[in-house]
Every structure is written in C-alpha cells, then in structure tokens.
Image (cartoon, rainbow, N blue to C red; front, side, top):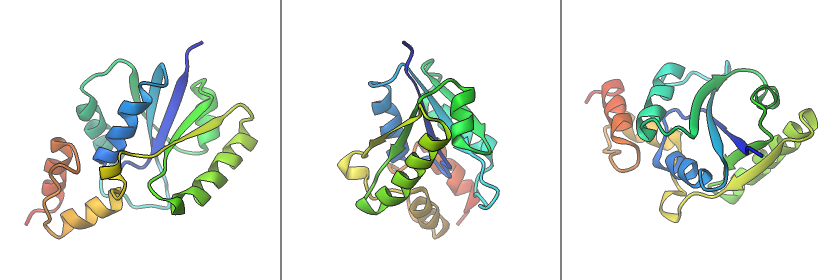
Length: 160
C-alpha cells in the first residue's frame, strides 16, 4: 500500500521547522504532498507561487515530495489526492486544542482521514512563520532559521 500523507500549511514563509517535519515525514510515508493552503481571510507576504518555489528549492527535486496548493476543505483535497493521512506539526501544548478540533472535523468530513502529529526538533520548537516575518521586517538576520533562498526572498521584501 502506498502511504500518501499531506502536510498542509500556509508556509508564509517556510521555516527550518517546516523542513524538519518534511524530512522526518519521509521516513514514515511513501509520498508526501506539501500543500500550500490558500486562505481568502489572510493576506500573505508571499504569493502561492513564491511559497511553492521556496519549498521546491529547499528540497531540490526530491521525487517523493509533491508540492501543490489548494483552496477549500482539506478533507476534499485529501480525497482527491487519495490520501488518508494528514501531517501536522505541534510546537507547543497551546497548538494542540486547535489542531485536535481540525483533526476531528477532517475525520468527520472524510471518515478515513487520520491526522499524525509531529513535534519539531527541540532547537526549532519556537519557530513560526509569523515570528520570521516580524524579525525580517525589522531587519533581523534570519539566516539559519530559514533556507538561504527564503532568507534572500525576505531581504527582497524588506530591504533595509
């Protein structure tokens, strides 16, 4: 059986924490679909195409990873991609309540859809895309917290 997992998120921008979860997921699943969610209620810093390009650059053509975008319900996207596994990251206990609710709703909408939670590496647990954006906006050096291509893209967005 081919185990296809979907790792959905905004990835605005992708961080080393995201990369850590993607690499570790490859040890558990045959294929991973990294899916950039299009949320009409948010105004992202980077376009969907920019986020997909940064993710592709970070993983340099790994054939077991597919990069896609979706709008609408994750359960519908998973069904269309014949996936029964959703991968979600938990940085802190405070993330769990929201993620648990989403997992239960997704299972209600797609009865075979299971959610697998991973925690990032200890040295990456504090990272979030919003923290990276804010630090970069004020000129902080984010090298090491994101892929070099992402750091370059942030410098272009926030020239000092």
